[in-house]
Length: 258
Image (cartoon, rainbow, N blue to C red; front, side, top):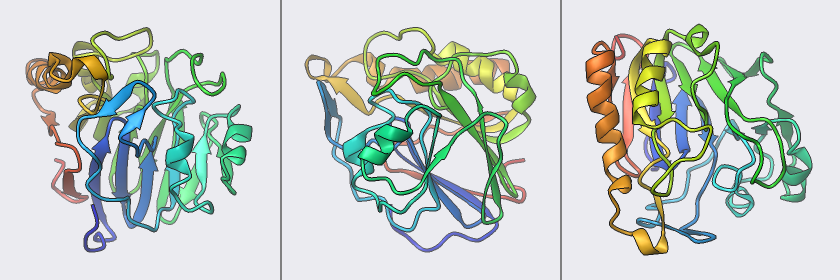
């Protein structure tokens, strides 16, 4: 994942895996929902991380407190001084994990990193089953190009108000054969693309982790392909980019996402 510094007016992303994305906008660098381990409870990663996330980072963006999004051992691998933006209610967990700078991700509150604004957005996702009950959020990153990182969510009232957006990072599945409440599957993620009027969409939150007994299951490969097919039908103006683990997509802010 290391490489030459980005153009200060560019947009690039590296899909590290699951909901973890290294996002670079106008020289600012963000890491979403860091999950940087090969084993998480009963889950295994389909292949090990190829490299560590390179420094520096301007902020870590945490969408909610479920274990596959707020992973304390993964956070401890990152410099403790990097700000972590997370929903209210998980600050004590983060401080116990050694995080020195915790910023509350309040919907409607704008945070500024260099030339880039970060605004937490609503999300429709149950808060239980994680380290601590808290709300879930997404993030809208706004510079010379705009990015919507959904975290975990279902469709929600007001999603259309977030668009249009240059790049949408949308979950299309999870880590098992079925989805619980508060998730997007390929069809609902395609509906989100239409609501957001996204120019480019990248499916995330799929094909990275699996329960030990389901190494070769279809859910590890099929969801992003179904998502791309459905988007081609319902929102043909949107370009879908399906990335492999560790793959980087460069989108210069001027022209490449039009």
